[in-house]
Amino acid sequence: MKKTILSLAMFGAFTGAAMAQSNVQLYGIIDMGVEHLTYDNTSVNRLGSGVQSGSRIGLKGSEDLGGGLSAIFQAETGFCANGNSPSVYNHTFDPTQGAQAQAGGSYCTSGSTFMGRTSMVGLKGNFGEVVAGRVYTDYFTNAATVDPFGAGLTGSITNIDTGALNYVRASQVLAYVSPSFGGLQGVAAYAFGGQSTGNANGQGYNLSLKYSNGPIFAGVGYLHHNATPAAGSLITDGYDTNKLTQVFGSYDFGVAKISGLYAEEKYGTNQPVQGPDNQVWMLGATVPVGPGAILASYSQIKNKNLANSAAKQIAVGYTYSLSKRTNLYTSYARINNDTNVDQYVGDATVAGSGTVGGASASGFALGIRHQF
Image (cartoon, rainbow, N blue to C red):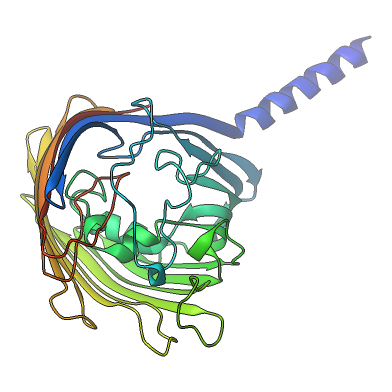
């Protein structure tokens, strides 16, 4: 009897230790904001779900496997906190421009699939991280990191940088993130293709090299995608190859952080008639003011293969922290389009473009975000 009790006690101790080595976190964001958006000589007032950040709920965690090795996972789904899909625009992008990040369903759920925002599992150790599943592309993450608006609010870089917009996430990804070597870190990801719909098909890879040390952050990124050609496109070898390159960085002076981005985004490079050859750049500033910060940026996109194709955005905003998890925000952005381009002002979950060249677009937002 004593041996049995001792065995049960030891089993309970080991079980408790094993449970203590694992952790699972329930987390989420609820973001609600009032917006006034103008585009193509019309306007709309709406209550948006995901102006600064897409509303979401997820689980993430890790398990200590011993010897410095851990298993990690994350599963995250979006939801429409305002009660319905936030679609405003006709989300029409040039079909040569690769995988529109949120095509094929509700913008709340990023594809109308359960856990469709992020779904990954992997291993983490002294060697870095290896993950597999559906994840953010590093091309988008780099742009969002240097954007003062964090790829959200009406000043989002994705209003101008269509490459960052079209490649927010990728499915069937195997990715490696190296450890930091004195602030230097590399990222390599490969997408196997066989994506769910449309131009998301086709293999691709994304490479980044970044340096982060004290006030300095800088890096380069490259994304290569063999997209499935759209019906009727001029493809000779079965692929519509997109090649995107970016250089980015920021410096924190304390009183203000100055950031910038430059990108060359070439679509359909193996077509007899090449697709858009977009040149994108952005300059931004984040100025801490008390418990909040003033945000500002100026950005531009221009198709070098098309005359009168520049779209220029100016954006200002302010965030105010009520606590570590809750903040208020407001922002305004305006895009001036040349006669052969029609970019819209969106936010973290709404984006669009049209065909009314030369029409300006603008957006104003006021809202609240809570993270738990």
